[in-house]
Image (cartoon, rainbow, N blue to C red):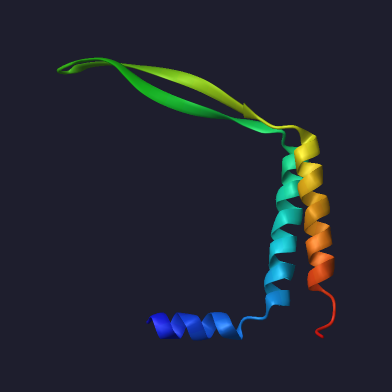
Length: 88
C-alpha cells in the first residue's frame, strides 16, 4: 500500500499540482472577496431536567477583510501562471 502511494506521487507532475493549487487559491480568493463573512449558529443546553430541556441558540459571526480574498486571488493567479510554464 505504501509503495503504491509512493509510486503514484512520483508520477505526478509538480507543474500540474501547481496549476491545481493556483486554481483553488483563485476560486477561494474570489469567493472570499464576494462573501466577506458568515454566521455560525451554535446550540447550547442550558437546563436539562428529565423530560424538560431548555436550549439556547447563539449566533457567532465570522468576518474577514475583502483584501484577504483579493490577495489570495492574486497569489492564485501567480501560482497558476508559474505552473503553466513549459518543462525544462
